[in-house]
Length: 552
Image (cartoon, rainbow, N blue to C red; front, side, top):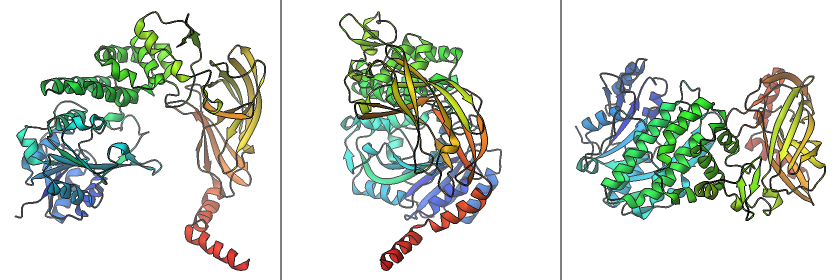
């Protein structure tokens, strides 16, 4: 048999439906001299039958079945490495794909210069809406060869093992295999590969297609998306400690601040958006696991974070669970705290009192948010729904409380508007915010969703209302935070001749906005939308423009 140039391992467990797509992407590679190993972690569905059929269809495909389920990704990858015949290795998950030129491009980079591994861009595809993005685009924007991770420690953020092609000699020389019996094995394996590699090449071309299901049910979510499990938190922290130990043993302790920053900015941040939805018992366990590790991280890593993230971390370390929930809402958006307290020197601190420790004063200092001086359009306000009552049809009455800790709004009633754009035309509902106390306003707004002007073919999608403020000719639009849980309200309405089912519900995830969903029904769904889709195509639009131009 001809020795293959590259072995690509497809790991699979109970994924008979998607396995053929993954294997098809390998059979379609422009570089054909490859070996495809399907490594089955003892599936109990139809995966064995599907895998054997795929192997029978193409002599390049081999099927390996583990004698028992390992519960992770490491064992099936390692068993495949043991039988791989090629000098270069790649890995693919059964629910993803390789772009057609992935093997060709990564192999060419290896042959251009002898390196320990090559890596490229990862394209992420949202399964729910088809949106495509590039994973960590700033790290793979240009072609370059680095003599070790010290040349660009930011690459620790790109911890996927699947975006790389490894020289088999490199893995064997360092006895580098995926750690078995733990989750987040990619992070440890990749950290070790980065730390041990003498040189590696980055290419900007896409070499992996990663399908993302961000809102999959908890029971079927991937390991990284099972953040609701305390065991998931413990696994992630355990792997970080193993990485820290490796860096010390490998003489690379100088990378610790960069690695700590990556943990805070990526790993911890993944949990932070969920914290408002966790109960006291869960948060207490979370703090019990997380805080001892947070205490070991470099101060410089905290200093590199945005201030709102530093506030959440400090409140967690102080075990202020209510404060954690409050501060974590709206992370990534300009959402203000409810309250700010000034110290004796005028320093603004998060919360209702001046912090008592040096660390807390450092972390809860909000000076860099410029609450009093930043441009009005980017100022920090906080808009919360304190009461939500359904009316007749698709009407709602909302009580909105606005917090203005920077005192940017003048004393007295304020004119505000509720903005909603389910179609191309925006619905604006004016209302008044009356002062409750300095920096706090409250108002009531009646929102009739039938007043939204929808396109003829209707509208299908989700929108989140915003609150609009005006001051001296300047405008500010901000998030409207809903109660974290309330019964979903649904009604069928006719708007502009189009029939819809409208559902009002809490967003259910960070930041927890009021969420309104439109779903066309009846004739609108069966007739109008299909007809408009056929008409609203580039060729039809271009033909219409040509005819219109000719008639002028």
